[in-house]
Image (cartoon, rainbow, N blue to C red; front, side, top):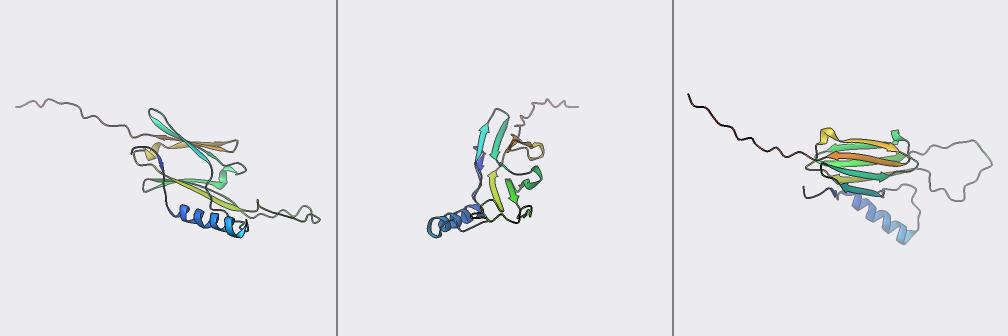
Length: 142
């Protein structure tokens, strides 16, 4: 792997339609497939991913690796709180939404990926596969 790169899959197709809808029809959608902001860093032995996911509970975030692709997804569900019957919404954009980003993780030790979620930031540590250098062995003849 030359570097950790963003996987371009169906999410980009959905993002294209979402942008078309916003640009030409106005912001009429309440369900978003747009990705969230991420930073990717390279260190000597690891890659680090920091993803902004403010307002999510840790249980709403899913991180999976399948076929060399790491996918981070998060979803808000439509939970209505009926505390104030006098409240009338003029605009409600925070109702629910699904967000997803995928990354090519070839060259990563998938079994050693670790992460934490704190203060709206998901931090993942992706250890690079350590190159195995074959040892020189002398074969004794009998």
